[in-house]
Image (cartoon, rainbow, N blue to C red; front, side):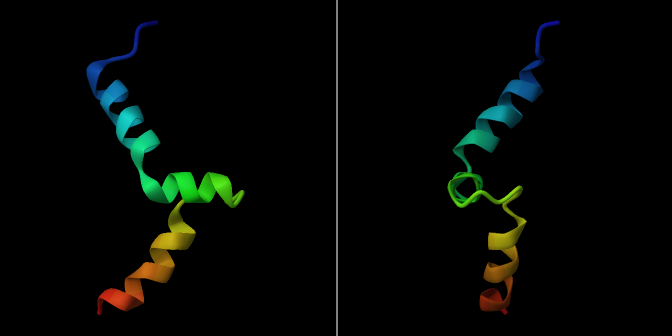
Amino acid sequence: MASSKTSRRWLKEDFDDPYIKMAQKDAFRSRANYKLYESPDKD
């Protein structure tokens, strides 16, 4: 089954995301850990 244009675009954005790269490096399951730490700094 061939992948659609939107799924290829989503995968490219997913692989290019710096938070996902950090999560993989630190053995976390998702990038949510970093996003939660970042959110109080914005307010």
